[in-house]
Image (cartoon, rainbow, N blue to C red; front, side):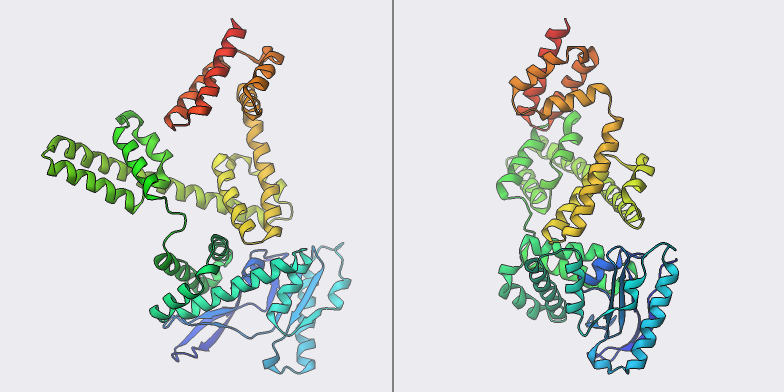
Length: 434
């Protein structure tokens, strides 16, 4: 069955009187359109955002929620509609008939004959979470976060009001809350572009008022500046990539101060060298960010693609050529956001896909790469030595070469403990080989 598009409706903004059109979902069939579920749970479905004043309003419209896997058939009718019983039954009948036609012939249907009815969206959402096995504590925490997001969105119309609200509720604006906000942005379907834009505006305004909680410390930035000043031209690109998280506005500001200090001291040669290196760093960072954005978009596209299919793991294996370490990194980021947001249902799916992705990557490894992974997984050097002695047949020149190459890479990252361990493994392997 093709996806059900939102129905267009004509509205008038209650704040400024602007007339505009938006889309509204009356059938949320997460069996066919799983992306609608997180949008509904996050309070971003059927939200109209005025294009003029950005006021957000929840649309009071009847809704059918269907999940064939959990056999949920839920009906929401807002009290304010005062719908006649016969109108409600007609709406339910049309929805159930439509759903029945979309189900496979052998699928259960009895649950469609007795929909559970709700008068409020929060009570409907509670039933969905309960069907997922989410605890009451998680429900209450998520509801509080959704309510705070709504308050922040409403306060955007007045900058002073927004700042006051941020300072008043600062204790609640935790990394977990920011992760939940980010998860809601990702979960809001493209058909709800106005709602997505409003959430992004909330996110950007929060960061502008609060600052980025993940920003590096002054000492970390200063250490990165010193490292990138001292590194050789040959190792510059690698080191910039390794330190990308530390390179922000504060980094460039500190770097500029170093240039100005060299100029003030009359050291023109050093000032020129620092200026040229800064330009090189800017170019490298832009390339890194472009590549990272492409990787993120490709990874999320693959995740969305397989999540829409009945068996995501089988779908991932069919697309094994698109699975690499970058995909696992994007998957891990999504899993971390789901965990911080209390979305145990999504977390379980991400973990399942992650295991399948790692198995795909592991199957591609050479015998030497697999053995190196085994050696690095043991806890102590003594256990690694025992493992080498038990697997002398696996030791060959290629293994020793790869151990030394990996050690070189870790030294460039200033990861001396791992580099030393790899060097030791290479020496022990060489002794056993010869």
